[in-house]
Image (cartoon, rainbow, N blue to C red; front, side, top):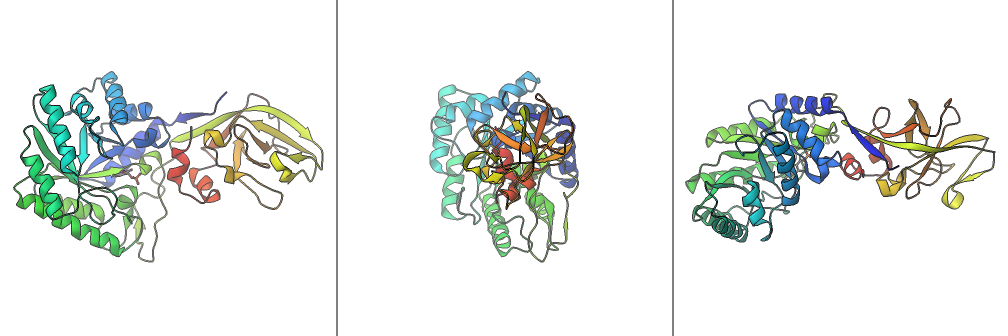
Length: 392
Ligand SMILES: *Cc1c(COP(=O)(O)O)cnc(C)c1O
């Protein structure tokens, strides 16, 4: 049997409510991209919809279609009830799907605008299609640069029958770093872009920024929420703050000497419990070597449990151990069971010598009470994002 995930729906709702409270005066967009950060797109979207989210964020149209399907099962069928932002852009083939499914695409090129206009025309869709324009304020990833390029995109939207500029967004590269000069420069660039949109005679409904760290960090300068609410208020728009990781109960460590406080620490709680079955229990004598390449040798008689999960399921191989170097652990019957030797593709061996009455058929907890994605991330030299997204 494959490993599986149990979603703590109450915690997911609770985390959303914490974010909504923290963002007071701003609207929280709940990001469910990447299969809801490994938590399952459909169940997560359903819980968030029932918790009253106004916006969900996905990567591409394929996820957008899946979200619309699950929403319609919940009786949510219109954009007025819930809007779905397609955050990573669209291709020409995506445009008809965007129109048919009433998704809100993020665009940043004149070409993308043309594809949407063609699709609108072909489908003879009534009403107007809202689009958000992403401004590249200095991350050099996605978005249009302020100035002539932005002017061209704005003109294309203004000249397109049926398209409406509903939002202007940007993304920060350094949001977890206190008093970042890059963040300050990005804010300045975004303020300029918003002025440019305003000067072009367009009044967007939303100014959209942020991620978990942006909401989390207090560093003594005007915080992100106060800043975006002020900026939005100035142009008659509403502030939209996009959050993913914190919804699922995790956050990044804040960095830099200027950190004053975290808004989210100890307030959001992990939502995912990841489990797999114990499929074998075996006694080995001192001297037995365990797993590939014999990197671990039993120094005393041990009882080992075989768990049906490995790196193919997303359990990072960096959590393997040797006699000289401890690795990760799982929770078995509420106690820590150290990973012994190398993690295999679909199997992992853990030490249950000190845990009474472990039996075939028991659950081993890979992530959850007693072991967090931060523990895995530390051992695998990565971030909690990559750990939860990697769970399959
Ligand atoms: C993923 C994503 C977010 C959410 O980031 P978190 O750090 O997980 O809160 C926000 N905005 C955009 C554009 C994203 O792609």
